[in-house]
Image 1 (spheres, rainbow, N blue to C red):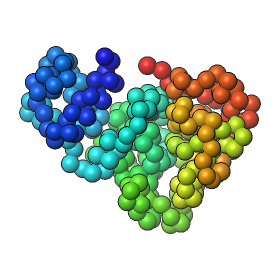
Image 2 (cartoon, one colour):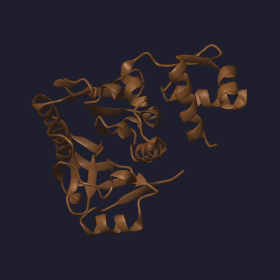
Image 3 (cartoon, one colour):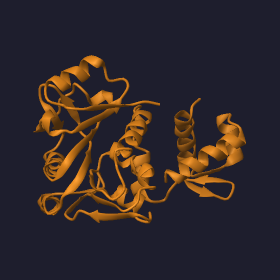
Length: 255
């Protein structure tokens, strides 16, 4: 069992119980106490659990909780994509981060950056990075979307339009050669479009399950994306088709 698989099991066990000791996790998951301790150190460093004396507990902050609990079989892929995307961020840059769950997963990998300026509409990103030295956060103002835990609306778009970023890191509901980038809702597409307009480079974080899929609203062409960061289950045929229709660069995140 690799770290990502162990992490998933540890997080699920702690969330179900509220808190568990190292030895309880060891017995429950059939892992050695040394492995559990090592994994808990890394998981708690990422902010996904809170370290306690002798174990770990579920975070009480609901902004963390909803994103960590977000279901789906693609969480390991999302972590790999997020890590690869974070490697594209340099010290001293100003970046846009949207409210997608894959973009949120960049947070642990951004904590060692220096003089990083983040502009975001995501409350979980704010909570994850608010106390990190070397990172300043510009939280976008506007109307709170409680289920998404993000800021949306016309005021938010005006806020974004008053700033410039070196790079934007965005998610998407669907991407295809025929229809480009698509979204489920107008408010999501409007915010993402504003990030795209005001950044020099646009990095799209998208796992293979969304490639070749179309959603409700078309909002951007493939030629507006500087780089697609995806996982290694995206077929070579899909990559070639996207490139043929205007996507200039694809990074494949691997284990």
